[in-house]
Image (cartoon, rainbow, N blue to C red):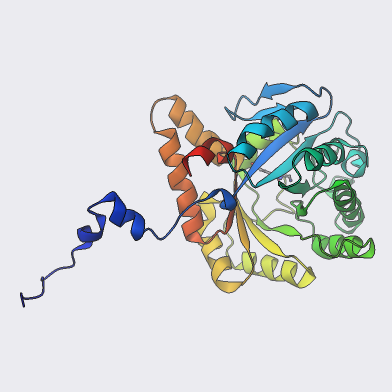
Length: 325
Ligand code: PBG
């Protein structure tokens, strides 16, 4: 017997692609990813590239159905939809309109792609004239009065065919309000994916261009979380579970991987992470400058998010990366 090596030979298991593959701890597959889409109301055929998000489009209802063909053929499992309505008002009436942009497109998507899991974002910011996620009175974003509107919105989306509703507004008590409303209409089996831990982040910048949802006054810091807080994330997650959330989300993803790991360890619930618009735009911009290999950094970023604890990742890279997974 030769003497034991005096040091650890980590390279042994890295020496061939076969061995590396055999011992890889984190793998990304199509089942891990959700592609977001922005749907515009005015022109069914619209396909307008979002300038700060190269490769992402504002799509009309017909254009979305066509856009889905290719990625669905390549294994796309789930999408999340955001509406860009034509009409906005103080009450966000478009958000819960049975003939609203999301409700209309949800029916069409489920008809054309019954197997695809359809997640709808529940929030008022795309539909309010002031761009805040709740109703506003005297410059304040109202909490309790907003809950009814969120519940109306979630119910209308589920009635139109949404498989999962994902509230992103950060009002207190919204999970309970939505759960109660869905249950009282017989939708006891529709899951809620709660954006439980959503920070007031500058990384949402490009999204607000895409969804035309930037607040007209002030910011979202009275309802979205302070970026410095990790323990508070546990309280938010716990409250949402008590209110009936089925899955939790942390958002943004990459700057908050410690939070993702903490939530993963504390709660035995499926956990999603949202790699947000700014995270996508940064990598795309560097790729365009020729400074980074866009595909490789995208895969590495998703790997890090999954390794940190995400079961599911909402990512604008989904459709592009599917053929490589
Ligand atoms: C709506 C909502 C936002 C995002 C998802 N849902 C914007 C915001 O809170 O301002 C951001 C997603 C992204 O940046 O990709 N409230």
